[in-house]
Length: 296
Image (cartoon, rainbow, N blue to C red; front, top):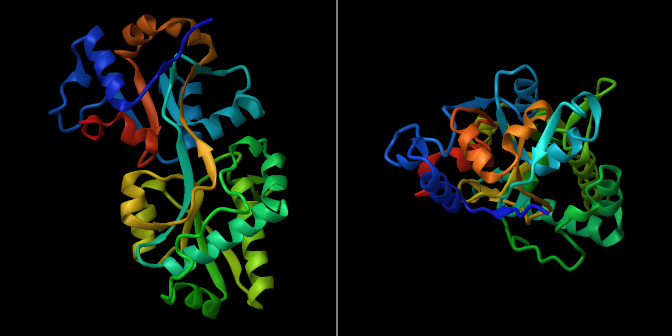
């Protein structure tokens, strides 16, 4: 049985530098990357699969939640494979609002905890094969419960909760022209719960965004929430008001199935990956992982 290398970013840099002297070791480079000859930053995670499939990229790094879905559902089955050489650190998904909009976040926390307690969260997660990734339960503490700012009241007054998303199966995607997915169903269930609890009539307005613009759109008021499998990185938590973690994730390496033998072991990976085009979603946890400056 092959052993996985449990990785932090620093461990990956050291491993690469130990085998080769190339870009990952040049931590002073303005656009240095951990490995590969080029980092291809794409608009959405689904674009990683498309660029692997058409040969524009050699390696992709994406959320395990999404990779696990696409490797077993749809048109990429048999075409794309995951590499189990490395195990990246565990991550947590959260929902983000503009910094300071703690009362809105408190209500979302309240809804998540209530749905976990009554079993609705588990039912929705099971529909998408994510029941083992749930991080919220009925005893989860709501750390923003005492917030008194006007952010929730403003949403109630407008009657609209504007949520930003990207296409990201099984989190948010279109099926038969209708937006669906785990986060879509969960958000609707949370808002339904809050409407019933408080006698409000809030409706969700979904807006597709470019992931790299999410914080800007929160700050300028064009979005109330980013609810789209967002990893709770230090950057996200420092720049937004965020909910309790609600779903587990980690980064995953993927390649074309036809190329998987080129990465049969760690030495083969380091040799082959040196010349690879590596695809990530711009502004994502994978983008941060691949950028040398985050590993210093």
